[in-house]
Length: 164
Length: 229
Image 1 (spheres, each protein chain N blue to C red):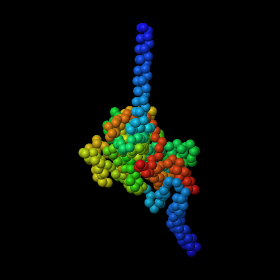
Image 2 (image 1 turned 45 degrees about the vertical axis):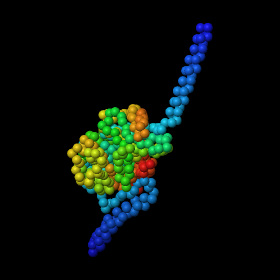
Image 3 (image 1 turned 120 degrees about the vertical axis):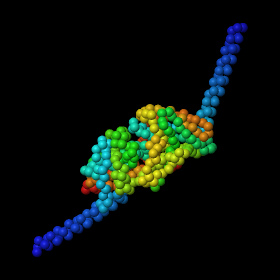
Image 4 (image 1 turned 180 degrees about the vertical axis):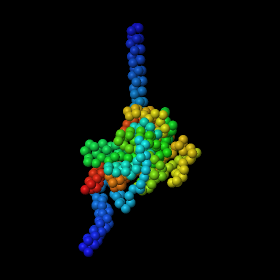
C-alpha cells in the first residue's frame, strides 16, 4: 500500500515537472520569436591609447510594425556618450549629434564608420583590442538591451554617401 | 655678327622651353585623368604650395623641404574625431600594407597634419598616429601656418561648439573658441581629401572619399610612373 502510494506520488511529481518544463521551454521560444529588437555585431574600433573619443558600431533590427528609436547608450568609464551621424555635405564630413536613432518598422539601422555611430567620449582608459565591453542601449518602447561589444580593428571603407 | 645670331637663337630657344614646359607637363597629366579610378589631378606649376613651417611629432621642424625627394600622402585630421579621421588613418595603414605586399616601387610616406593644434600637440599626435602605423608622421604647429596650407590645397574645416542647452553652434572662420570650449568639448567638420605630394614637394593629385585601397594603389602607380617618365 505504501509502495503504491510512493509510486503514485513519484509519477505525479514527474508529470508536474515535465508539464512545467514544457511550459518554460515554450515560453522561452516565444520570447525569442517575439523579441522586438535584435542586435548583431556590436564592436568598438580599437583606438590609440590617448584617443579622446571612440566609435561604437552595430546593426539594430526592428521586428515590429512600428518605428523604434534608440534614445541613449550607457557604459561605465566614459565622460559622455552621444548618438552621432556623419553626414557628407558637399565634401565636408559633418558630425551631427542626434537626439535619437530611428529603426524603421520591420527594418534595420546599420551603425558603421562614416555613418551612424555611438560616440564614447573621454574614456577613463581606452580599451585594448580583444576586450569585450558591456553597453546598455535604451529604446523608446521602454526596453533596455545589454550588449557585449568587441574591441577590434575596422576594415570598412568610409562611404561617400552614407545615409540610409 | 654670328655670335649675336647664336645668342638670339639661344634666348629664343630657352624662352620657348620655359613657356612650353609647364604646358607639356600639364598636358601629360590631363591625358592621364581618364585612366584614373579615384584620383583627381591637382598638378599646377603656376600655383606651387606656399612656404610653410610646422612642427612634427618629434618636435622637429616640418616644412616644404620635408616633403622633397620622396612621395607623400598628406591628410588633415584631428585626434578628437571618433569616426572620419580614424577611418582615414586605418585606410592609409591598409594601403601601405597593400603596397608593401605588392612590392610597389613607390610607398608614400603618410603625413597627418592636425586641424586642431590647440589640443593636438606633437606628443599627442605621435601617440595617436603611430597607433595605426609606426612610420606615420603627425604634424602640428601654428594655426595660421596650417590655415594657409588648408587654403592652398582647397581643404576646409569649421569648429562646432555646444551652447548651454546642448545645441550645436558652428563658429565663423576666425571666431575665437569660447573659454569653456576645451572643458565642454568641440568637434570639427572637415573635408577628407588625401593629397599625393610628388618628390618636388608639390601636390600632384587628390583622393576624395571613399578611400578604397585597391583604387588608390592603382592610381598611385600610374601617377608616380608618369611623373618619373
